[in-house]
Image (cartoon, rainbow, N blue to C red; front, side, top):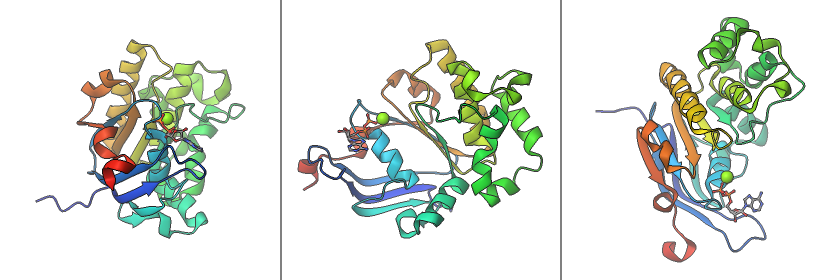
Length: 233
Ligand code: ADP
Ligand code: MG
């Protein structure tokens, strides 16, 4: 018997961007188990990034509940929600969102600043950041480099290290390999999986590239997760 609650659950979720009637996201029931890796596939404009924003609590559902590790994130105050996100979710954005003038080391450590529990799992920030960098294939001297001076592939690895540090239970990645060629993509995904597995973090990645499916425990289509407004009525 699996007694672990899902790390993520969405139930009866509806969301519309204000002023936009042409797009509505409906997610009747979607769950992620602890430590599984899931690729969510969908066309551009199908609502993948919107769904990730709901999961991260940067936007809140019009209806329904989004629970991360059992907590309804919309029920938290804005400040608590930011802290909850930092504690529980490692984020890899499509554009990486690194601080270009800060060092790689400072970029990787950034989420720990807002997440005391996550910071508590990191006994030596320097050693942990250094090990993550090396395991993700960054050169030894990368830690002191300005993030903005690195190649796209290297910046992506920094973004992954920042998401992984302190082993948050959920790693969410928004098309993080779309700027890379196929062999760099494959290398990156293998390194990311090795790290996520070691930490027993759940990995949710969204993409339009179905070739990535081979790397994941489960592949889910956006069209199966969502319903159009007409179909849902
Ligand atoms: P995907 O990530 O699958 O390409 P998105 O979630 O970005 O899809 O977009 C889904 C729909 O929501 C699109 O119609 C898009 O124009 C709209 N949308 C996305 N972000 C915003 C926003 N910040 N404000 C208004 N509409 C948005
Ligand atoms: Mg998107």
